Every structure is written in C-alpha cells, then in structure tokens.
Length: 475
Ligand code: FCB
Image (tube, rainbow, N blue to C red; front, top):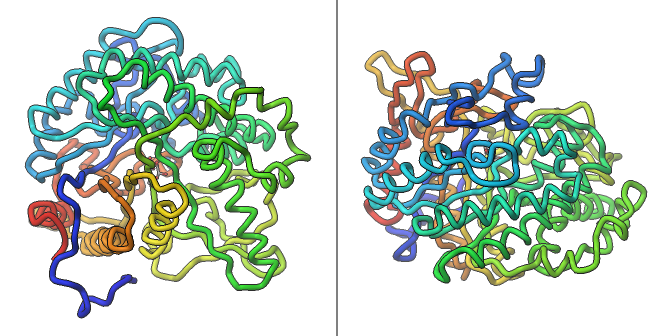
C-alpha cells in the first residue's frame, strides 16, 4: 500500500540537505563476543540461554560477529553510501557490573568503531540502552527498582565523557515500552518477568533514568551534542467510530504512548493513565517529588521507531491477534490496565513478522508528533522482515523490502511536505541479525548474512537504498 499513487508521484521527493541517510543495529543483535574483553552477561544473555525463551534456543553468543568484523561492516556501509549509522553500546561491555569505573577494552572497541565510521564520513548516533541491562543490576531489582535509574545516569555520564568527542547524537533509551512491558509484564523479552505492577514501576524508572541521563549527558558533552530517545509509538487507530472502540484506542494510547511522551515531553503523567492503572500501582509513592522535572529535561530530537499501525476495538467487537504486541506472545498481557482491548490486523498485506504494511501510520505519526511537540524528528528505525533466499548466482533479490522502504520513505517525504522537521531515516537493519525472541529466523537486513560462514551479501534492497541516497531522495 502506498500513500501516493505512483503515477501521481512528483519526479523527486524533497529531502532536506544534511538529511541523515542511515541504517540501525543494536549491540546484542550483532556483536557476539559476549565473554570477551571483560564483558559480563546482560539480561538477554541469561534469557536467551534459558530453554524455551527464543526460537531454536538461539542466542547472541556469536550473532553476526560484528565485534571482530566491524571494519568490514563499516566498509560495507561506506560502499553503500550511508551518511549515518545508529548503533548501541552494550552496557555490560563497558561497565560490566553496572556500577563504577568503565572497562578499558570495552571502551577501546567503541572508540575503534567510531573512529572507523568517522574516517569513512559516516556520522555515528549512539544508543545507550538497547535492552541489554547488566545481569547484576537485574539481580538487584532491575528496572522496577528505582536505583537502576541512577545507575543508568552514572553509566551515561561516564560513557559520554569517554566517547563524547566523537559521537554527535546520543539516544538514551531504545523503546522503553518494550523494556517495561515486554520484559516485565508479558515476559516475552528479557528478563521474562510477568508482573503488571512491576512493569509500570519499570516504565517510571525508565522515564526517570532517561531524564537523569539527559542531565548527565548535557553536563559531560560539548554544547553541539544532540540528545534524543527512540520511542516505538503505536499508531493507534480505533476499528470504528463507535465510542467503545475510541475508548479502547484511548487506553492503548495511554499505556502504549503517553506513559512515555507525557513525562518526557510535558512533565506529567496523564490522569486517564493514572486512573486506568490505579488498581495496579500506587503512583503517589512511585513518583517522588521532583521526578517529573527530571523526566522532562529538554531533548533536541525525538526518535520514532515505526513498523506497523495498531488497530483496536472494544473487547466485544473483535478478534484478538496472537501477536498483538508485535514481538511474540508472552504468557501474560503486555497491556496493564488495558488487558481486554481487542487487536485487529490493519490489512492482509503483511511482512514475515505478520506485521501489516501501511506507511500512512508513519506519515500520520510524524505529522502528529510535529504538531504536538514541535521538535525536530528522526526515524530511528523502520524496515521489514521477509523470507529472503539466496539465488544460485549468489545474489539476494528482495523486491518486497525495497517496496516497503521506498513507500515508507515516501511517507517521510509526505510528513516533511506537511511541515514536519524530519532530520534523518535509519533503516532497520543494516544486516540480518538476532531478532530477539525470534532468534535468527527473521531477516530484517538489507545485507544478507550467511550464519554458517558470516558472509555478507548486500541484497537488491541495499543497492536500491544506495541509489536513493546518491540521488538524495526518491525518483
Ligand atoms: C524493534 C527493536 C529492534 C528490532 C526491530 C525489528 O522493536 O528496537 O531491535 O528488533 O524491532
């Protein structure tokens, strides 16, 4: 599905000069080398090594061996013409116990990686937390414990001091919704806990950790540094205009989106969210005086991760999809206080994840964010999994992924045309990798990985993206 019929498309869609043409990855999904250089286990090491947690028992032990092959990977990015790269820093690699001084070998790795990027003219954007909490901090209570927010701010400060001279864009958290609700309510992500109240506590401490980290980063970084956070905001649509379906959408918007955007960008928790979840958690004790001033420290850019829209209805009006949360089902609801809302597939045109393809959710969300918050925006993730196959001649032809990316870039151009200040697009993902609970069974890369040999092969979508970058936009 496209937002503008192809015969109506202007010859060239306008992307601002200096637009970041990027790709994104995350440490646990690509690095491997999980025991090298003093790295300790994260919650994802523990979780993936627990029988039954991931497809085929897959783990990130080797992943795509990026830790040893990063030079080859940066060359690949340069060959494709990427101007920007979003990666994440593994907390247990550079602060193995989750507190105290940083580890030299860990820092050396990220110094070498960022040097390599800069030498190739690729601007790095570093995510501080893409789900790999040091296991030691989980053992001390994890995100439901308030202290984790302070530990995160300390880690952010030390990391910024060490790498701040070479990384201009810093993203505090990746998708705190997944950390809180997939990790602590549904149990489908690490650490695999299933306690709705703990998930809400985790959400507040992620907000607090974000804000404390923003303060620490500002103090440690040059004035030119740009601070951001990547949120997987749900493009929520009621299935019909009926009041009960609109009410279902309000509830999912509250616990799926506004639980992060309101404290981070408005300095408050919304009354309707507090009411929907009052039976689960005592917000007055959870949120201390002064917390909301911390959570809402100003950021420079808002990062959006977008894959598919979310269609909901009242419980009486519909189906409940098996993969309502997009990352596999847990044994418990991922929606505390909105457990009975029904989810519907937006359309039947889906990716290998079963996620409906609908770029209008991206243009709508960017436009809505622009109107509501007025901040410059980044698309920090967007992309699609398909069941790619290697042709006998060794090439990988993935026209569905090319169409997905092209149509979503059109949606970005639509949002820009409507006034949104979108500064960059980071395609998920540079290469196939460990897709969390799905292990290696889902391929999101524009570069194919042969997991037996670690051979990298750019797919036809990579060649298409490369051309689009060279043209500075879309034809
Ligand atoms: C996002 C995650 C990313 C990847 C994509 C497919 O939710 O941030 O790591 O798994 O989904």
